[in-house]
Image (cartoon, rainbow, N blue to C red):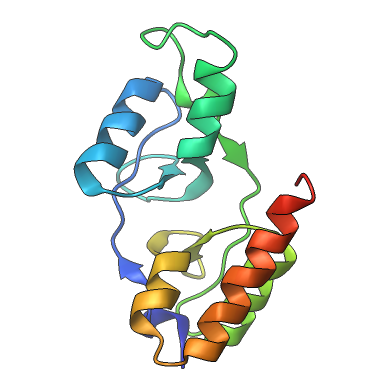
Length: 146
């Protein structure tokens, strides 16, 4: 199975200079836990991601002003990604190895074309054993403080 077969296509995105509230509102409206951060709307070059956890730990827990905090100040750069034609196992291995629940899918120009979330694996992969393994490995890594 290829990554493009399981990914959520065309995820909503934000720009680095957007306020964090915009990302939080998109997460609520789209019922997602991650927003890819792109260079601009034309190229959609992936620069990083911001997760619900980033917002909780880097904005709320630090007592930052929601209205004045920009995504670029709290986003995660250097996100692990995969390509649409990569074998899905490669993406799952990267998720496990890097202890991430979501992985952006980019084309050869680093343009965001999709995202694979742990939920996509659970709902779209017809291999319950593989799904359980992915969830267990990601959760195990989270439990040791990473």
